[in-house]
Image 1 (tube, each protein chain N blue to C red):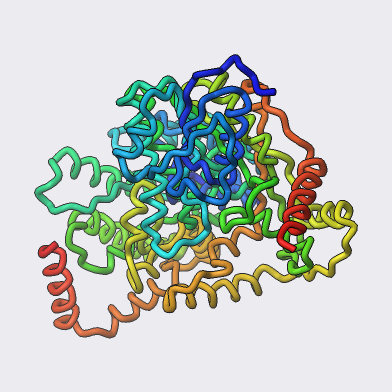
Image 2: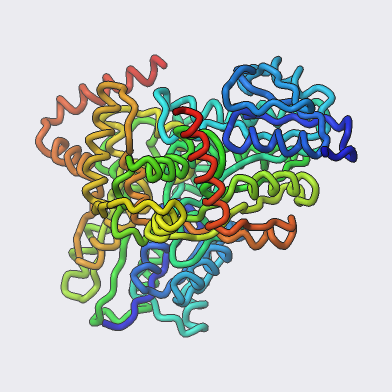
Length: 263
Length: 339
């Protein structure tokens, strides 16, 4: 097989960084996209030295109107051919709807939805659809469930789920594999870990390390898996979701909500 | 004879009964500094008495005791930490390593301390890929290990205080060994002592996993030169030689002259056992011998590059054979005392 080149958005930290490391470890060349001044060049140098692969850095704010267009233009100019697109960049939140201002939600939607759609659209122009190519969209297990305090985030991830599943149908006649990654919680930013580590039992079991998620995701996308749910506990939750009747779920969520409201 | 150049310069060392702290106190005292050695128990058996060392009872989580100990100190060495691989209350890692560091830095800023040397760890980078890690390299994996996560968060605290105008230098020792007490936070001493006594029986995996071992005297000297020559806000890896388990035990065999049968145990067997340990710990609160997050590490290399410290701090690495000989000698002497 010819050497693959993967484009990863949001590559400088968290899950994106784990994707970069996992892909480099599998001998792929990389195009890394992340915000300016986020340490991308240090990461790129580190990867080049350790894996002797080609790493192309693009520092760009994906919420800018022309960013998706600019990225593919740069790739054409430098004659870089990408075969695997990973739409990973995203912005989360854990707050009541009225706690954040409109600028935040605009950024969140631009990043989680608009940039994913536009990059996917331009990627399909960039490739030859009769050759093997891959797209991995990062959704969330939150896209399956209604979770309070994740109103906009969860909705953007539901969008990604619908979008991805629909494209899977549309592209079924081509050699383009498109996969949806639906991870539960991931221990990414250590600043946020204090919260994750105070969880117990089942809630704790749903949270995984980023390198574990990245490994499962890359294996899944290369195998052409339609939806990748890393972690046994998470797969169990999705199964429960399918078999529990709607009214019961409603009760569970309301009880959870009550507990949150009482804190 | 002790030096007189540094006479009457008062310095504070937190974690004075720790593996690094106790020898750091002694070295500073020998250099002529007036050492205020902060410890929770001033009769702790690991403390080394010296006429220039004043043991002060205190706790980095009790701000008043910290402030009165730090009063009139020009410099502070913050070596205190929760460095065990497991403790009963997980929250202790955060409290001691993060909040404790914040308290020390806050106090130093308030009292106008000239410089703080903060003892971090190479654990903030954790496992390495094909090449040794340097200071600017990113971390390759997540933070499953409590100690590593909270020590990383402590470094973020340091960054905040540097912005506020405090002068702080971070040092990152790798796996420290040497003459010193055998404790839960020092796995190398456990391995060496176990080998000498014939109670250590295994090599993890194929024995080819590489780790970096640093002699405690080098770490102490690195601290002192970081205080003198380090750059504000910078971090310095204080490492030693990169050695795999096989050559580690081969060196022990050569130096002790003792042949031990060591069994290579596959990492997945160790991992399975560690999961049983984790279960035991979770449901019965028993001290685990080994946890899954550490078992995962046995497949990884942990190689670190000390070139920055060598260039800027005049840091020197004691060859592993020499350092480990001294360690063995020390442990054998102590074993004689016990008999």
